[in-house]
Length: 101
Image 1 (spheres, helix red, strand yellow):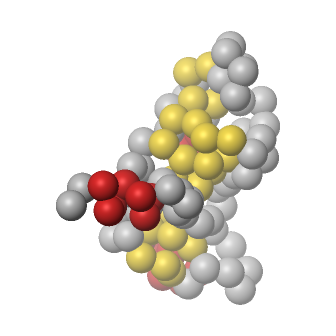
Image 2: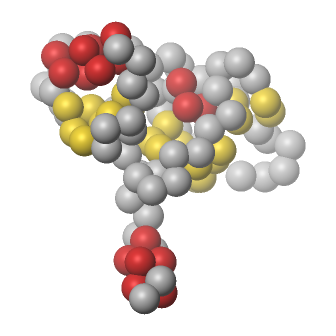
């Protein structure tokens, strides 16, 4: 994202429905609205709070690192887990894994 576009705010990316946390690095993620990577504490005018509804989709629990049904997502959110609409899997993560050997 261009410099100056993102600002620190209370309505942060990590609480937005458009944000998908990175599977291995939860402090960065992918914004589906703007199509780019952001930090979890950034924000923008396109912020929309995440709401868990009964739609037939799967959610992602960053705390447990697992996929959840809407019912499970509500339970995890109620106990304080970080629940999102999905997770971002970096296409280059394979290279990071193999470089460590």
